[in-house]
Length: 551
Image 1 (cartoon, rainbow, N blue to C red):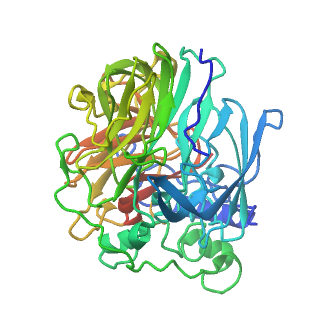
Image 2: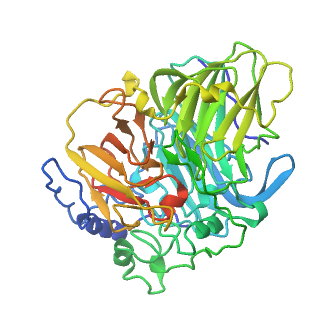
Image 3: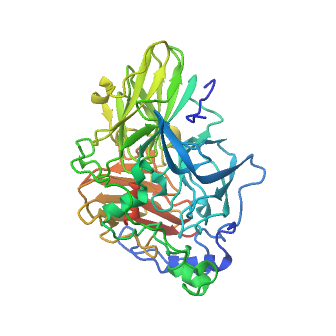
């Protein structure tokens, strides 16, 4: 059992969906398009009229009041960030920290967090990887209205499953600023034995550097075309402005009153320097690695020339919790002088797997155990295919800090690229059963037009993929593009088709070019749930869609 834990940090509109919106949501679900086939291709029956997507008014029943409660206020605010070596830039953060201070609970406890928005734009919080009720999922225009500047919003949910998670906005490209933090759910019966815990948060950084912002970068990538994702308001179904649900709830969009009023969109105009790159390729990622030239790569908010350091004793057993909070970069991670044993992927335990290095896509998480050797060792995260790197340091004795160019031999030895090579721990393996519904989607688009989409269409909030509660759904995501994509499903974990037909549990998975993801999940958490690429610039350009079912 662990003996201590070490953090990675250095020093309203409270009613989400009213009864009218809930009723409108039922009509939207009933009229959904692109329904998945059920064996022979027969669509499921429409949802009953008058019921909310989750079978009740969202914002209704709260977790059991007898459950332990962890209360906290989270302030999103503009603030300076110091990345190391005296480099300070203006960005947006949670409470001035980079990464934000972790939220830590024990499985079974209830999180009660009030988001206070001190930003100049609307925002939300998405609790990435956690299975929670739909109206707490933090997706503007889908599960809640955006939290406008000066407003607050109360998130409340029970953390039912232990693991390594994180949280971030789901508004435009805000996640590529400094708005992210770990969410750690401890296991009250933790089976792993270790002496220390090291939370490792990876990031690619561009905000504030020579005037750059993520919005500027998106403008450059899209050649001036407006975004079509969650930063492009007005949108529906429950957002401010258009969309079938919002129209029905407000008595018609554009009337200038109530929730139908559309605020001015953010100015997506280019102000900073050109940040696009060509020729970033990776064999591990199947070709193109990315298209943004980030000036810095970070581990726990620090650059490689002024790295964060973790101190232990030789022989200590250390649990690494590795989170990729980047916007567009995969990282290849290795600890010099050590092999690691992978124990968890996306919060769920796997059969122990030894490797020298691993590739982690945006929003993925891996837990690993290492036994600390004697000395000073670089923990290096290569920006895969881009030529940059981040570094932190494990120190168990005296010695100089490794150079920023340190390249451990482990990076070029055995590398875990896909969790398909992992098997689930028996405690979390999905029960075997035949799937009830086959849901196929195709990732489409390309860099030339930057027209990323699903099934050759950009995101449309009125396009829903319908399943039914209680079904085992087989999800097939076909990557018909020349680039890799980390695909994320909200509100559920899925079982990969991996080492056997009942593979590792995940919520985010890398899909290589011209390959496919085959995964099973149980439709046991009703609502409106996003399925999207977690390259934030791809999703905001249209590579996302919505899964829908009633309670």
